Image 1 (tube, rainbow, N blue to C red):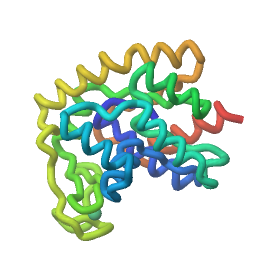
Image 2: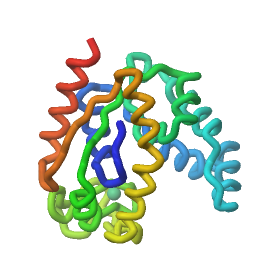
Image 3: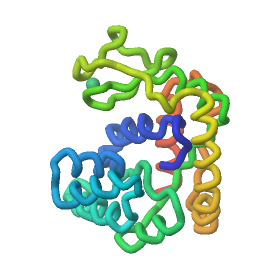
Image 4: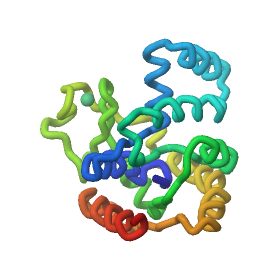
Length: 211
Ligand SMILES: [Zn+2]
């Protein structure tokens, strides 16, 4: 699943995962899990982050490889947050094949509006939205009753900057997968399209593209 920050890719990926009984693998979550459990890799990740450096691709791939070796991945999986660069895509090819790249095409102004109304659970990381995906009780998580908060870097001017970086970084990667004929664009031009509609569209694309 490919898409700028705030395109909803985490939300869609997790819903598609439930509908297709296919694991949703977020590399961000994999890394956080290792850090939380203070594993050998987790400790090394800590060292990189403490120095303000990026976690090396090879390390992320090591985690990914471990995850996709689990029995639930034998018929496939959905990747979210990886790869983001061509070197990462090449690392990925060493451990797995890709069938399809779903590219969420969302205009900047829609993303800015969506992120400025985004709410995140402090405890479990679940995502809500003040306009489109309200929690049942204001300020509380439906799943774990944790506090909901807004991220500092979801402010409009910061989002604009994050989007510029995203586009610069991923443009070459989109070209890379275009050459392999694996890109399917899902366009989402409005800010309040219900997630179910987008999910349905993506599943249709998956079914028609992968026999
Ligand atoms: Zn929660």
